[in-house]
Image 1 (cartoon, one colour):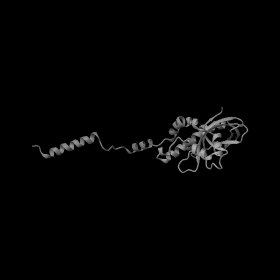
Image 2 (cartoon, one colour; image 1 turned 90 degrees about the horizontal axis):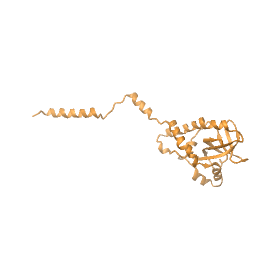
Image 3 (cartoon, rainbow, N blue to C red; image 1 turned 90 degrees about the vertical axis):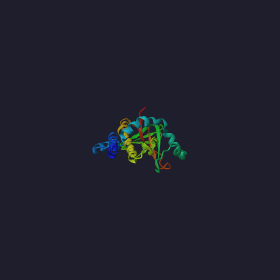
Image 4 (cartoon, one colour; image 1 turned 180 degrees about the vertical axis):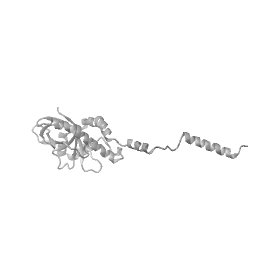
Amino acid sequence: MRPRWWKWALGIGAVGLFWWVCPPVHVVPLETGRQRRAGDRFDAEAFVEEFWERRLLPAEAQAIRAEVLLGLLQTRPEEALERYGRRLGLSRSTCFLVSGQGTVVTVDEAAVSLALEPGGPVAVVIGLGPVFGNTLRDGSGLLDVNEFPNSQDFNAISAALNRRVEERVLPLLKAGAVPGRTVAFAGCAEIHDPRRELFPLRVVPFQIRFP
C-alpha cells in the first residue's frame, strides 16, 4: 500500500501545474501599467474629429432657420424654447441649432454682423474669437452627458470643439467677410433670457460658406 504522503504530493503537484498554466494573478511591471492607463485616457481631439465630420456637419439639415427662430422667440417664445431649445441639466441658458444666410453689415476685430434681409437690421452676430463655453456642444443636441461618466471628458469635448472653430471656421470668415457680401452659416446660439436677449442672435458657427 502506498503511503498517504504520496497522495498529498500528487495533489500539490496538480495544483501547481494548474497555476503555472492558468495563473490567477498576472504581475505587470509598473511602467507597463502606467502606459496602459495613459493609453485609456479619453482623446477629446480624436473624438471631435470624427464627431465633427460624421454628425455635426450633417446636423445642419435639422437646424432651424435663424429668421424663423427669431420670429418665434418674439411671438411664441415658449414654443420656441420647448420645440427647438436644448438645455443641459439645471442651466438657465437655452441653446439652439440654427442656420441661415445674411448680408454682412459690419466687420471689426471682434465680430461680423449680419442682416437676414436686404436693408434689415443686424440680426446675427458671429464673434471672431476666442470661443468659450459649451454653446456648440450643448446646442447641437447630439451629445448626451450620461454617456460620459467622467465630467472632465465631457468638458474636454467643449474645449476641443471651440478650438476647432477658432482654427478652422473663424479664419475663413475673417478672410472673406466684407460689408455687402452674403454669408451662409450653421452653428449654435445660446440665449440666457429670451424676454430680453433676442437681437442680435449670437452664433458660434461650425459651417461658413460664401454663396
